[in-house]
Length: 318
Length: 253
Ligand SMILES: [Fe+2]
Ligand SMILES: [Fe+2]
Image (tube, rainbow over all chains, first blue to last red; front, side):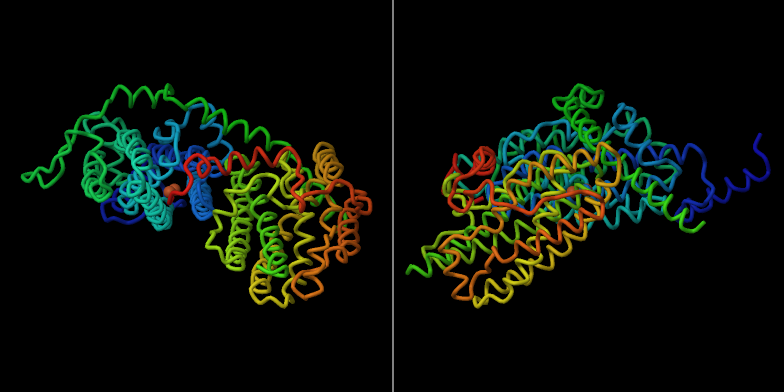
């Protein structure tokens, strides 16, 4: 049985959610709400960070100095998003090192799309255009999420994501309007990243394990399928402008629904990649661990230096 | 181009090469740093150097007047045609090496660019004015890193000393002038790098000395960058960097 106090707290929490007020770090919140947020926000943060790898894979091979600068700035932004989201997650009472540990031990997930390899320069374009494009659809919706720090993070991050999406589309456009060889690169990249981009919105609403409660708590504001549809609707006309062939032969405008129809996602692949057997799952985590381990002596040195400085300060104060 | 324009062109390309090569090295830290914050910070420095390279190359192309672009300069020259000072091209090694190299070039550029702001060539002076602010900022980051690592743990100190030892041989070249560059000094366009050596030595020695780390007077050891004689590392960097342009030349990207 709940005590009077916690019943009152629960009622206050419910009222805030109902009235679209934000929950702030110092507010009381149900344990499961907190856990759910930590799961979703850290997954989001890890995605930003792991996403640096497939795109970073092309920084040293970018075809022009301008492209290289833009890509480097973009990947840097993603690192910034990761930092910002880690900080926002820390407001829930968990530390960054715990979060990183959960990532490296496979307890925490990140966007599955980054478990696919970037095989050509066009993949950088496809990621910016499709993956950042899908992320924006999701994040715009999350600007209205009920947890204050998460909502504010989304508002801030969204601005940069639309720049990312534009630079990706610009790369695709240059390729699609280039030589047949370049156009083929663009087509191939889009074909490979199309389905994984759709998978970014998660399983069908009927299959989604966390969706129900997340919607009730207004952590999530729109369903996976609705967001996915929105992404398809906005992206198909862009494919037409590029003059590329549709990556899915079943894409067709449905007058009655006012939406594009499209083919079914290969859910077997979806679960396979989520459960760790995608083309790059091991590589991504191994890379993250290696960088982290290689940096351990640096972090140790910083701690030692600070300790010495503190000791000196204490001695001179005494 | 007359002789003077040729020298100017050569000078601008050389400065562009210094920047493009170092920016490439710094960009290799992306997703590999000891802190996520450091990935961002090193990326910022890399971006500043790409910006410099582009400005120098663009101006070089203008001086040359043959309609070449910055990318023609960056992507269609071989190792022997690259003329960067060697210190810029050395692999990133560990974080200590990267930061010591950065500290060295930051100290160098703070003074070099400050003097280059007085160039009689307005475009060069303007680029230097922008770049010197960046380098001052870079130095504000590299110095505390050297301090922390030199006074951190035994291991971090050992790594700093290893880096110093390896870089010692490449420092002297920063102050080595060639005839064509000297003639640009006489015209008031370039800066006499040889004259920066004493102050550089003093600054670096004082800074390291405060952490009880000794560094000798710089001496000319390994040289050749401005003549296109490089370490073995540059060829690998260029083959990676130029791969798309070389396999599919003449296209828009
Ligand atoms: Fe992002
Ligand atoms: Fe992004």
